[in-house]
Image (tube, rainbow, N blue to C red):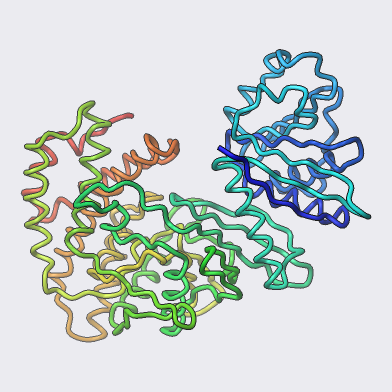
Length: 502
């Protein structure tokens, strides 16, 4: 595969430092960056900026590893700084633990030509040379690491068009998708958030010639976020202001709503959950348009949470969780019985009304702003995958929060607060809602069991497995509703509610 290259002119040391930040934002475990250039070309300056950005420590001492040959740092991922100038032979890399370092983190290598034949083929090469009064950086490579670096450089260009080209970039968070978020800072300005959301890669067909994301109606571009953000803001929901957008490349510069999470010391606070339930009730009592503008001439049509989407999500339990805990794929007999029971339950939801369903309305996506009043206390930050679906789904997402154990009492108070607010707003069928809540909670938690195993087995993200006992407990709570007796019997017969270790 032919290498691709991009170039950046670096007029001064500050520009070299910003390139180090850009590279740091792109790094993932297994990446190798090879720094080439003559003495004085700026390799150490670039390496220092990259390591300080990764560790988020501007004053971190970053000595040259000329004599130690390797220096390691703990950061959001371990980074190992190699200097091979004094390397006698490429085989000495084994003594330095190069392969182990790359297996657990990222490697930044000066004088890589002394052992280039030992580097992985997807290593990214950064060649620095003198150019006029500054330096020229030529960055080349193939594969995923180079694509991430190129995208990070493009994000810097996007920030420049918004007047934030000299901003400091710091990694904030990623999520279970390919999206990533950064905090960007400029002196004298409030921090902002940069969203890096590559267009969705659909993947192979899984059913009826369609990819999973097509059937589940996963948002394909950042236009969905923009359109829904505008609709929510117009309805009085506290969502981020969008300061700049590039829909084609999937970049946004948005307001930072704050840093106080929805939880306190990692635990749910009942008053916050009831406040969020009351916000949902106000949203669900509203009439929504589902043909939403994202930019002049660009619209996002909110998809339905239809039978196909509900079914393929629930099937994730069969596709990933069952093989992991049973050691064998789900049998055709189990699949047939599973589909039959879910079909009966989905039938019960028909004709009960729909709303704008945010889909992931839970603690990681809610900012608490206690100094404010009413619904403005809640900042909502993740909603691009919103659908037209049952109101009960978002209540279940909140009250059975996948990332934290919500005690039964707080769950009850949350659901009761929602129901009370709906009753206060007008006629409301409480029994029908409680049944729909149980169905949607069971569907969502069945899906999540499959997703968390998939994140481990397919995507190499084992941290999600620690949540499985909580999700099984939530599933037991949902299946206690009389309407779900048949599904509960099926799950129990196949041991799907038993505690299992993976």
